[in-house]
Length: 453
View 1 (cartoon, rainbow, N blue to C red):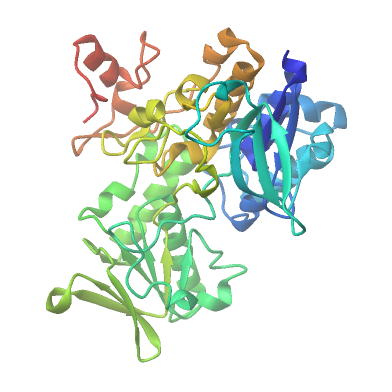
View 2: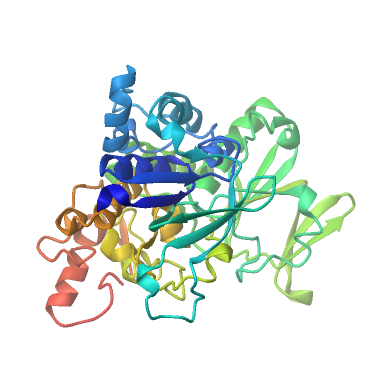
């Protein structure tokens, strides 16, 4: 029975809290394990950042139903929150003023998950054995058992390194005092570190673009601040996005504003720069790309690595995962989001079917489910956990049903050619297993692969 099931949820971020709300609404018992000192710990690391999706895409429906009896005022659905506003106006009330407060165990870092009485190799009877979750809370190791596990621990604390080959650049750890990752608050909390300095930003995604824009503003305020954009690719325009074609207006505006700054010469651009070495140079940091005498280099005061994130699977080694070998996402989901196939800004809604593994009752969701792909939206995670909660409760029809329509990016790259006809032609019209119109057409003709490339 659903009401007899205990569901362990790893991570108390936006999608983790939404998962707990859906599990609770299904009559099951959620237990949330959060590594940080409070819910939304990862969001606190980027609370200065404005989201490019409005409130209507950032509030989960089951969570809103939990908040309603508390007198919670729903934010304007068309306004754009910062990470701090997301915390103050939504996540913190959800974690502290609803029944979810009784389910969250903070400062509880999961160290291992297995099946009671079963190692990874043992199969017969495995699906009936409960999960054993071990975690560390600053005391002795703790353990709990659960009927199902949803891992929504995210990727924020596992950033990709500076090296263009997926490995740290040689010398990266040794020069860690001059390297930051993600999206530091260059005009706020971290202002003293970057003001008046030569700062290189490595990456081409939204984090890199947003940081470079903030550095330009900082340069206007503090003379001597010099932003340098280190781009692994050859074409800066690929980072500019869909502009007015983007249905997430703030995302389109970000790319347009960035393009204008680059065109105005406010940002020094180094293309085809795949970092290989970091070394000291007269008290500064030398960033080199290439080998020996063929190496190019720039000398800066600080380096910000904004090259994305990757999932941490270290505590899942005793579970039977089915992951795509390239992007570390569940295999069924990977074909929808693989950036080698297409670069759409959104992906069709998906749920338990695409997120399940060979370990019955275990699911990856949220940002972690996307592995190394960069196209995740918060509302996508909410749809994931709605479906997963239904699946765990045994409601297979609800688990398979799609209850979400996503905004399109307006620009899709197919084989290096951009089109403004929507994301790979837009959502599939009839085939629910297809990621887009291009994929639907490919499937209908008997072809394999996404069909977008």
